[in-house]
Amino acid sequence: MGRISVSTVIDAPPARVWDVVRRIENHVDWMADAEAIRFTSRTTAGVGTTFECVTRVGPVRFTDVMEITEWRERRAIGVRHVGLVTGSGRFTLRRARGGRTRFAWDERLTFPWWMGGPVGGLVGGQVMRRIWRGNLRTLKGLVER
Image (cartoon, rainbow, N blue to C red; front, side, top):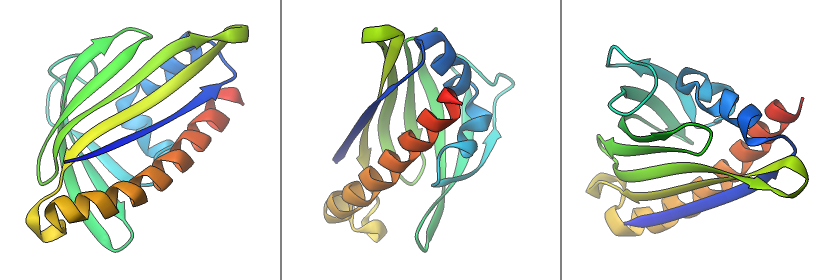
C-alpha cells in the first residue's frame, strides 16, 4: 500500500475553495491525471455517490471506480477506490491565517500486480505525488482567480 500526501495554502476562504472542489464533475479542470468523470449513481454529491474517473498517468490509462464515503460541507470529502486500484482518499480544508485555506490531499492506495503491486505503489506514489502537487498548483490558481 502506498501513502501519498500533498497540501497547499490557497489565498481564499474555505467556502470559496469548497465551491470548486465539491463539484466532482469539474475535477478534470484541475487534475491533470483525470481525463473524464462519469457518475454511476443518481446523486452527484454527498455520501453514497459513485463515479468512474478515466485516469491517465503517462502511458498507463485505467478507470478508477470510486464511492464518496465522507462529505462534510466546507471541511472534507472522502472516497473509497474500489476498481483496479483500491484504497481510500481524502481532501480536507482547514482555515489558515489571513482568511486562507490549507487544502490537503491524502491517499492510501494498493496497486494491482500488473502495475507492480507494492513496488509499483512505491514508484507510482512518487510519480503521483509530483502530478498531484501540480494539480494543487492548478487548483490554487483556479480558486484565486
